[in-house]
Length: 271
Image (tube, rainbow, N blue to C red; front, top):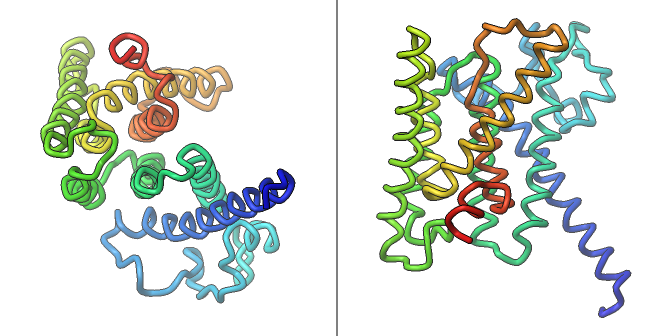
């Protein structure tokens, strides 16, 4: 069992398991992203084609593979299936795999991070589609963060102070973004940030602490700037067209949670 080839084999199987589990979860997150903004149940009715209402049997609902086998079209009406489905499934599978590699053996941190990532993926998908961040998802994230605070390893070493750290994380995330939004409104003469973005970063700060919130804001601003620049240069986006900010805040906070050295606080404060 000490043979490195066997160890590599079992490790590869483990990571493959996390990818498949993540892709299956991504299939459910697609349902959440489509139905929650409409106020619909995420359980009933079963998965169906949004074009013709064709109920999908299990073999047409296999993450990623069904999309490829059906060549991106509904078997019933032959209309195109949105690329959102395989992309979210693949992204969730990749996120689960990277998180399992990064937090291998630290099951408490891994479990919490996977749950956080699922919330972020749903919110990001909705924000890209509708430019909104529903309270129906953000508030449950805040509630779970509060319940989990005494065991949350991102909130410091003393369990009895973690609730205070959680509050500081919320204030740092929501407060600084609220301040930025206020300054932006003065300069632009209109709302520069949506209330959903402010609540989102506050919720992320409740999980990752004030360092994670600030680092997430820093990295998210870089990610959004790079994405907007690419889209403008490629002609797919006009310079003054508003873009969703929530997905980049999520990406920044998750990146800071995975690799703290990417953030400013790691170098300026914690080091």
